[in-house]
Structures are given as structure tokens and as C-alpha cells.
Length: 148
Image (cartoon, rainbow, N blue to C red; front, side, top):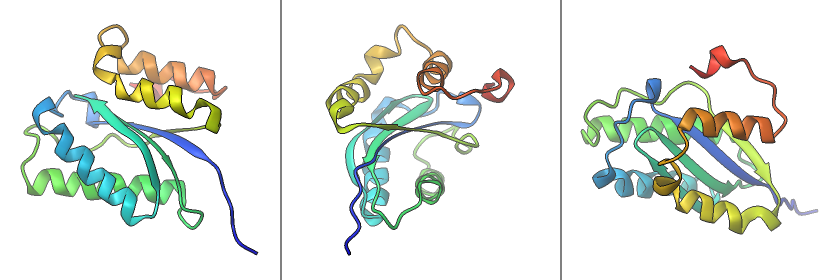
């Protein structure tokens, strides 16, 4: 029997210490590179965007790909790419951990728009506040000390 899945993940992770080092002029190159990592893992990308200190990825995973392995692959590969190409001065590495939230296909279009408008959105909400909101909306208990 074939394997069928319909799981949409919203993956979020930040630069080390949330340093605002992802300059706007090179972000598109970074996102294109990350898209390549997703394609290599046979994932379907719906939207990828971010701002100076964090990245949002909306994707579905191939059934043979574990979420933790995918995030590790994206972070390790992109970190190496950034450092070798000297893409973002001041970038040391990605912060440990990540957030991953599942959504229904009915929520996909609204999430695409949300991710598309990150620059505008973060004029009024910090990444820390946004991340806490995601955790609360998902019903995930968390310790504030681990979000610093």
C-alpha cells in the first residue's frame, strides 16, 4: 500500500542570540539555497521568508523525511554555505532549537500571506513576541528562560 500524508509544517528558527545579521540584500540568495535543501529532501515548499534575525519555512515533508533531520540539514547546510561564501558578516551560526507547528490545508493560504509579509509584520511585533504567540496558540508550555 502507498503512503499518503498531508501535513503542513511552519518551521521557525533564529540566528544565534537573534543577532540581526541576515542583511536584506543577500536574503534571497539564502532562501534560494534553503529551497534547494528542501528540494533535495523531496519536500514541497509553500513559502520561505524571513527578516534579519530569523527564518520562516512553510513546507510539507516527504513521508521518509523526519522533521528533526530536515531542520538539521537546512541549518547545517545553510550555515556552511553562509560561512564559506562570507554571505553575512557577523553570522556565527543558527540558534539551537526551532519551532515547528502543524496546520491544516485550509490555513495554508493565510500562512503563505503571513510569511510573505514578514518585513511589514515585524515593524510592530518582535521575533520573541511572535514566537511566544506561536507557542501559546499551539498550546505548548514553555519556560521563558529557554527563549532568551
